[in-house]
Image (cartoon, rainbow, N blue to C red):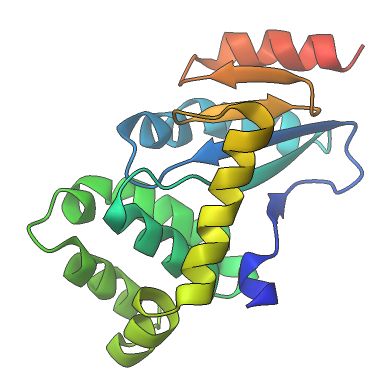
Length: 176
């Protein structure tokens, strides 16, 4: 459980800039951010060692919590890839008549069989409660009430999929 709930961070752990994203895997705006702006941020800031990026769960609906739990039960080094798959295939599972079965299909492809998916994701109350606690902390500390919401260096909040220029400005200001 501790390993599954460990913060999911990419980039240089000693980077001068830190950005945390509160996101829901069922949020179309979050998917849009990851397909567009995130790739540019990753190239310009994360991959160059200037930004440490942290993923923080903020599931907005029932199936999203299971998607977040699935991402957390794969090995930590596969987390970012699983997030990418879940956001890329978001419409297929989030809008399905049976989203949990669609998530189980994605889990199988990732090597998480149906029995393990049920026991370690769907029925794993401590993990699900841990994910809710991450979201609750965002609400309590930063008044996060929509996704995506970003916290830069524990100071500045950016709400929504605002585009690369807004992040560039905020990160440049934070680094001075």
